[in-house]
Length: 351
Ligand code: NAD
Image 1 (cartoon, rainbow, N blue to C red):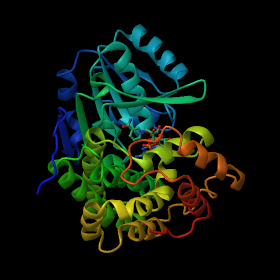
Image 2 (image 1 turned 135 degrees about the vertical axis):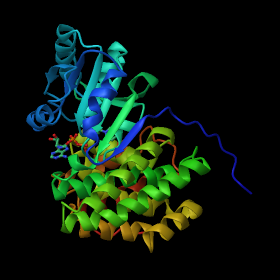
Image 3 (image 1 turned 90 degrees about the horizontal axis):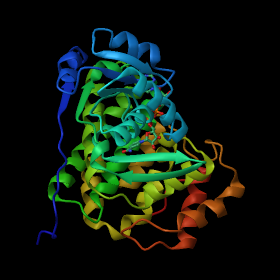
């Protein structure tokens, strides 16, 4: 019998393809008359050049950084007010999109998101912000971008290493969505397809980062996985990554890439249906296949490589079991400690 479910879809206007950037002027005209562009310092020049045809862009804040610190948002707000902008354009990865969301939360302005990584934030009403070193996460309709424009061409230059880790970060949304408490049959289909597309594309991107077909499939997969993140609740894997990122400052996408096979293996005995479906699209034991995928795309294998000290394992394990998210398998502190120790060492996951 079909499990009881509730399906609630978020509004979405998504434009996907190659060369879609040419549509920015008309998409912006649907949102407002004067736009503030946001980017990281790294992508400032590219954002300006690529969007030079969009005359509605009247100002550019190029200070977006990871984890949306509120002091950066305050500085961006000043630029926004001085510019008289009535809409926002985010050009970049999850950090840039996070800043535009933080501005939308404070002003109610509509956003056009132009993602250049596979993180998926553009499809969610979720915003994580950092204040005094503490990260808090909220869900609010006001932060969901009104329009999302995917242009495959923008991902051709995403470095091979970041492509692999960002792609596995995207898969993590779909993997946890597939066994989430509130997954609907539609979201499960989207999650499966997202995992399938990314698993097929990422190794091809690792060997040829300019492979347009693989880039297109990966970006489509990232869109699907972001859609799942926007609708389904996340579990142990995301809790572990938030703990490790928040308390130890470990990098976002890389941490996801290391932890996912271990978190999935921990949950495996309690998620038979999701595990079977993942196995069908991954072509084998899902936790082991995702571990192998990490090696194929040269993602870091261990938390040690990301700069975590062995002495931090105990603390990280203690924090990870505090205020746990809902999880299909009860949280067993000793097992969680073992999981983190294996992820730290770069060992294979143990189901
Ligand atoms: P990022 O946005 O921090 O980007 C990493 C670096 O890569 C930056 O310097 C960026 O300028 C550069 N970059 C991005 N795209 C590039 C490209 N195509 N070519 C060359 N360089 C490029 O990294 P991310 O992993 O996309 O985002 C991580 C952040 O997003 C974290 O803060 C995370 O919490 C957040 N996030 C939020 C959600 C959500 O739903 N709220 C979802 C996923 C991630």
